[in-house]
Length: 460
Ligand code: 4AD
Ligand code: MG
Image (cartoon, rainbow, N blue to C red):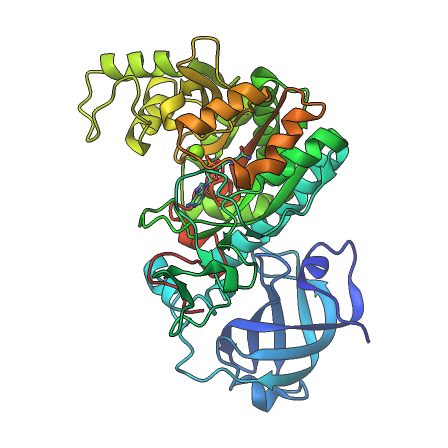
């Protein structure tokens, strides 16, 4: 007999005479002569109630079925007399696959997130984390679907790279050299003897590669892991996170901002519609304001606000911020939160940042002070997207690199794209985990990544 998943049994339209279901025991209650066993198989949040009585073959084992045990059940799907569920299974046969002993750590109904991080290998078995990772999966599909329907080409950009896209020096180096015996030349590390013959690192962004392909295929996107050795132990930074990076030829900054807005709205709506049961769990137990936040995002136009105006608002706010703000300083999380949560109470796209705080590739505006950058800020998270129109003019790009003291030679291929048929183009990067935090109300990035990597944490 073929196994049926709990999700399909619970949404059945009519009774089923014989079925096979497998899963893990969430709880067991015994009454006189029979037992109720709640089974979960991960296909959905809800459990399937199984009723077994003393005449059910295998019943002697039922009393040993502890939380976490794995079972096979053959039975009949019948209308449930119990409250809160339409269907239940009358067991005809129960087989125990394995019993989880008493020291199974997930006995209690609710554990703290901090505790569950210490058992990251078991936490997907809880309601909350099961829901979070089902949403993570659905959201990934939704991203591909969005771009596919818009005719974007899905591009796999390299994870091992020789260049630093963001220029922030936050890269993990990659080497095949023996660290106990590093080859040296004149006292310096001799990278010529390393695997690639040059220093290599894990990518911080697929953007530079994506630009090359946007200038060939028109509209592309990459979606993959990126790595940053930022030593910031915050609730929204991880050392390994996933980024979605669309890159579009012939788009200017305003087209880029519009796409970012449509994209976020589309994804939020998709999750509300497709993961309603899981989202309901988060709005009940994790963040009571979740639905209001999500509806706010779908229903309102995002504010488009030049950086200088953002600074004015912050200066006039009368608030004392931990980090002082003036023209030329980068927005810190507290400033982002003020703008999006308190002042505008909706998503805000800040654009035209001072060039001094942004990377080399952003297009310099006519004022020669600002660049065509944009950051999307959302309530509860702050910056969720960073992007820009790219500098397509070779002479501007080169002088920007010189200004920043960058060595041009390693970027010869990037500069080539500005030599041969250069064209205006734009793109952005969306932090996938930050979006997950937004749609679930989960407040720590460590809790939306299966096995998070943060400073001093790579156990699992
Ligand atoms: O603003 P960032 O640094 O932009 C770029 O890397 C561009 N090259 C993207 C592009 O234009 N194609 O990063 C983009 C987004 C941020 O807005 C944030 O959501 C997320 O990536 N992000 C992080 N998420 C988790 N942990 C970190 N350490 C993150 N750093 C950035
Ligand atoms: Mg950024």
